[in-house]
Picture 1 (cartoon, rainbow, N blue to C red):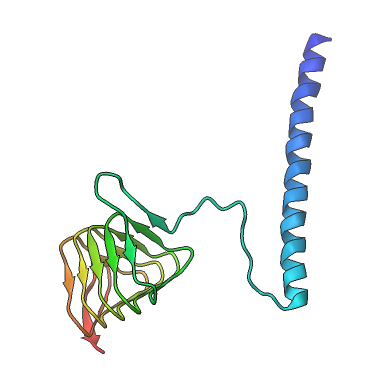
Picture 2 (cartoon, rainbow, N blue to C red; picture 1 turned 180 degrees about the vertical axis):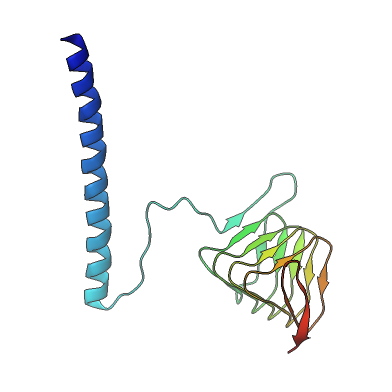
Length: 153
């Protein structure tokens, strides 16, 4: 009898978890649907724990110009200086200390290691990895793993 009671308790937890998840997913779907119906296509995920800008106590915090654009899924870690009109695309990761120049572009899924300088109007192509200590000169496009010069803009 005691074992049956324990099994039913474990089963109850599984049912509780499953029902809770079902309500959570239903609520999220309904919120998206209601926003689409009224024409507001923005969606805020209340559950996501992702933080775009991450400070490192021993190194410092990122500084971002107001006119730069950083995708919500990008991650900026430590003392990264991002200048005006720079664009950092989805799932890009930039580690500091690093400088991203004015109007520079970091492509989706690209990784920029610590100690990198991306000069103004330079671009790093999607999925590229820029190794530590590299300087991407003004107006150049770099691509690959590791990233290397591809062409001039």
